[in-house]
Length: 411
Image (spheres, rainbow, N blue to C red):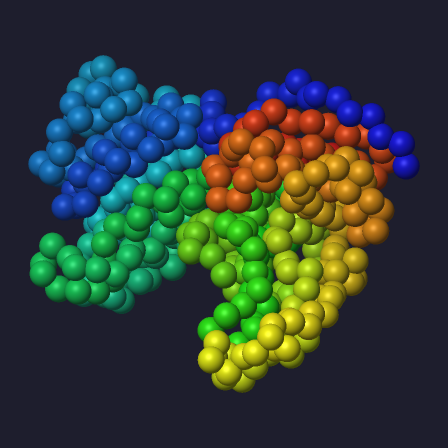
């Protein structure tokens, strides 16, 4: 296989909501102050944010706060001449309409088509995907009428980001707190992706993190993989509309909203989890770093230093199965190679051995490309012989660059 190496000159997606307009509806909940953080995070993600508020919301947080954060005045008064038709224009411009927090009253109006304020009027007028993040006392959230309204919205295609558990304004502990900002933002990104993403309807499997092959109940053979590249791939595939399954080794990273996560520890467990999934998937991205070897025998008890002598200091190892070449099906297959030398030779040899469509290789000794970093500098080798070197990018941008090539092969 011959290979040509070229620097790519593409535009990369560093921010997930670049060029998007998000309408943010804020209703009269004690959680309204958290909407300021949402507005800020939406802006940081690249979105233009237009805020609509109910009169009750202004009792909890000033419209000026949102104007300062978004650069645009919040729309509140239904009867103000300049704002009378503003909600219709916002509804037309929006790529998604997020209502956070949404009170029980707001949920009822949405469910039954009410439009008594700027937030619900905009919901009636928009054709964009609607995401709702309720916040209320746990007893209200458990009320049969509220449950019926949520079910009606769900059936209509509204994405409801259920509240989190915690201490509430009433002093009680239970479900009712506004969901965490990353989950709400993930829901917005997923809703846009399902509407227009190039991977809509596709089943994508991503693996992440390292495995842990036990030596005894305390020790294991593993590696330094953090799982960040795999988790970034899962989030990016979700943002493009895919149904994503994430099979990950031990990791403290938060699961991207809307992604199905399967936790494993060993290579055998990862292989077992992947087999039924790959039989009906469109793409398999093996970003995990499974161990190449495992102890020939694992001790059932902790191995004590005092019991060892020089003859016991050798650790017999055996190879683990190569996951990607063992799995059936899999659609478009992407392998990964973390190298310290001879990157091109090692990567192209693995590409052939693993029968993959692409292999993504990086030098883990290079600045910004090691385990646990937020960035990566990779070269993508194609099975046809082409090789593309990407500049140092965020792992989210690298993920989209990889998925660009996967998407092109699927079409």
